[in-house]
Length: 92
Image (cartoon, rainbow, N blue to C red; front, side):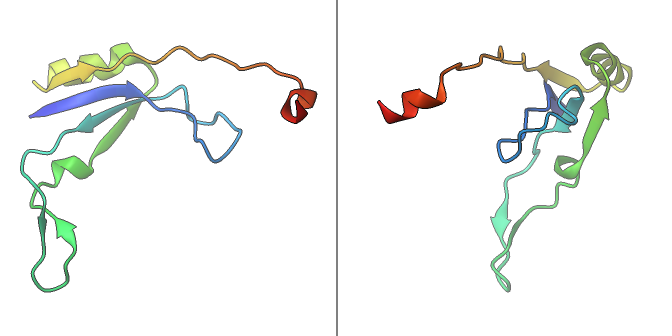
């Protein structure tokens, strides 16, 4: 069983930064998805791919993975950069 640990990104649709300080442990898919012949929906028998666990820190997420023998890759958080410009620059 493998998983990835990452910090939740900021929602692009809103300006708020709620829940961006949480770390998420998300299991990777163990089997391929397939189309249902009757309805055409895409799905699989893998229920672990639906599980997302949240932790307050990266160390706690890593400790949980080690405790339960989960092979986890930690994805680094990209640096936050602000593009500062004046409103008048939109009209140049």
